[in-house]
Amino acid sequence: MPRGRKTALVISLTPEERKELESWQRSSTIRAGLAKRGRVILLLADGRPLLHIAQSLAIHRTLVYKWGRRFLKDRLQGLSDKPGRGRKPLFPPGGRCPPG
Image 1 (cartoon, rainbow, N blue to C red):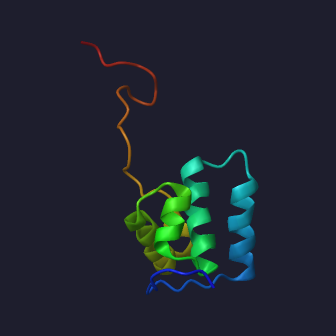
Image 2 (cartoon, rainbow, N blue to C red; image 1 turned 120 degrees about the horizontal axis):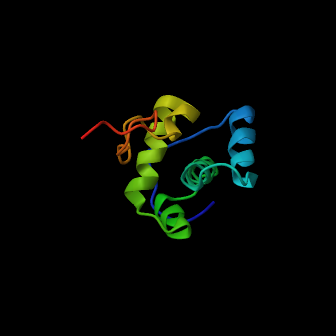
């Protein structure tokens, strides 16, 4: 068992969820952020301490906790980006600029 502080996040994966998360790690077409979130969940499910996961993935421990909580709440769907994130487009989707 890894040494470190105990956490309240106890994640148990179904075989289908584990298979899906492991496939994300091998995929070359999935977004890197989503693959990293999947890695966080796999390590949490293996019982690794938050700080160890954060150090090995070069992210802050609060992010590890955030993704763990979101996974517990919404499972795999909780790992995707929420709508409305990112920069809004400058031009309309049709490609035509308004006269002006």
